[in-house]
Amino acid sequence: MPTASQPPQPIQLLDLPAQHAPIRAELEAVLHYSLDESAFIQGPAVQQFARELSRYLGGPHVVPCANGTDALQLALMALRLSPGAEVIVPAFTYVATLEAAAVLGLVPVPADVLPGTFNLDPQAAAAAITPRTGAIVAVHLFGQCADLQALRSLADQHGVALIEDNAQAIGATFQTSRGETWVAGTVGEVGTTSFFPSKNLGGFGDGGALFTRDEARATYLRQLANHGQDRKYHHAHIGLNSRLDTLQAALLRVKLPHLPAWTAARQYVAARYDAALADVPGVAVPNRDPRSTHVFHQYTLTVAEDVPGRRDALQQHLAAHGVPSAVYYPLPTHLQPAYAHLGYRAGQFPVAERLCRTVLSLPIHPTLSDEQVAYIAAVVRAGYHSDEGGS
Ligand SMILES: *Cc1c(COP(=O)(O)O)cnc(C)c1O
Image 1: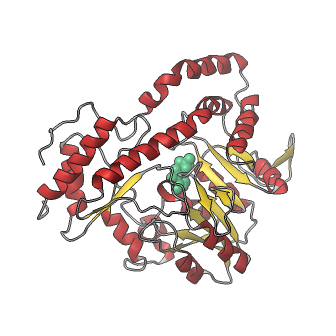
Image 2 (image 1 turned 45 degrees about the vertical axis):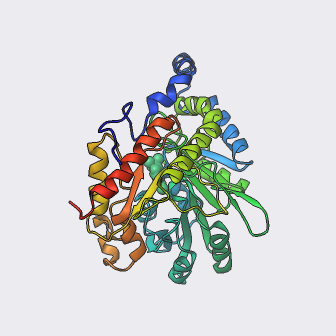
Image 3 (image 1 turned 180 degrees about the horizontal axis):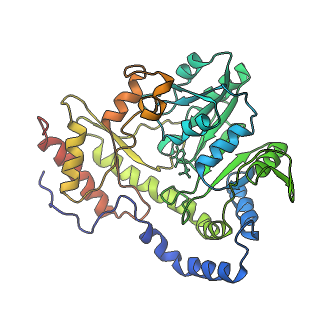
C-alpha cells in the first residue's frame, strides 16, 4: 500500500505543548500566583492537590513526594524490612523499580513477566518467594494493571507486603472475580506514582506521590518524606528530603481535572490503532486483560522475530517516514550492568528478554488526530511488508 513519505502534520512521540495549549492561561496564572505567594515548600497547594487526587482515586491517603523513584524508596522504607531482605520485581520494567530496593540495601529479585500483558507473572513471583522475601513490587506497565487479585492473594498467603508501582497507570482499575472494582495504586500496602512530565499526569519537572489505605502508615510516610520529622526540628525517624514543590502541586491541580478526558483520548487513539493494525501479519497489538482498564501510557506493539532485526528495521522505516517510536525497554532489569553483582545470566527470564527484542511503542498522546493515527498505521503496515528479509 503506498503511503506519503511524510505525515500530514509533524508527529511527536510526546506533544506536551499541544496538550498544554488549551489550559495555558490557567497555568500561567498559577505561576504568577505562586511567585507572589512565595510559599515554595509545603504551601497550601500541596495538601489541596493531595485531597483532590485522593478523591479521584476513591479516597486513599495521598502523600506527595519529590519523584516516583523516591516514592518507591519511601514505600519500602515504611515497611521497615531488615537489610538483605528480598524484594521481588518484574524482570521487565523501568530500572527505578529495582533501584529503590538496591539503594536501601535490600535485594531486588527479578521474576519473569507474562507475554501478553508484559506484567509480573504471579506464578513466577510465587516461585521467587523465599523466607527472606519482604515485598513484591507489581508494576502496572504501560497503563494496564498487573494481575492484582493473584498478587494480592500471593502476598497475603506469604505474609509479605505488596507495593504497586503505578507510575504508568494512574486511573486504571481492576475488576476482581468477586465483582469488586479496585483502583490501581490503592490495593497494595503502599502504591506509588510519578508526575514526571511524560507520565499521564505529568508535572513541569519531577514529582511523585504515595497512596495507602492505612492512616498510621500515611503519617509515617509523610514524616519519612520530610526528614523523618514528627514536629518541627524533632526527628523521630531517619528520612529523606522528598517533598513535592508547591509550584508543582499548584500546576498539577490545573491538570488533574483534565485527566479523565486525556485518558479517554488515549483509549480512543489505542482503539483506532487496534482496528488499523489488527491484521498486520507479524505485528501484535497490545493484549488487553479484560479485568483491567488500560490507560495507555504507552501503545506497545510486539514485532515477530522470524527475521532477526525486524523490530529495528520497522523502527527505522517509521523514522524515515516521520514517525517517531521508542523501545521501552531495550535491556531487562537482570542484565543491567549495575545489577551484575546479583549474578543473573541471559536466558533466565526468557519472556522479558524476548520483549526487549520485540517491543515497539508508537506515539500515543491525547492530541493525536485521526489523520495522524491513520498515517502512522499505514506506515507500520507498509514498513512491515517492505522490510521483508530484514535490512
Ligand atoms: C517513571 C517511572 C518511575 C520513576 O519515576 P520518576 O518520577 O522518574 O522517579 C518508576 N517506575 C516506573 C514504572 C516508571 O515508569
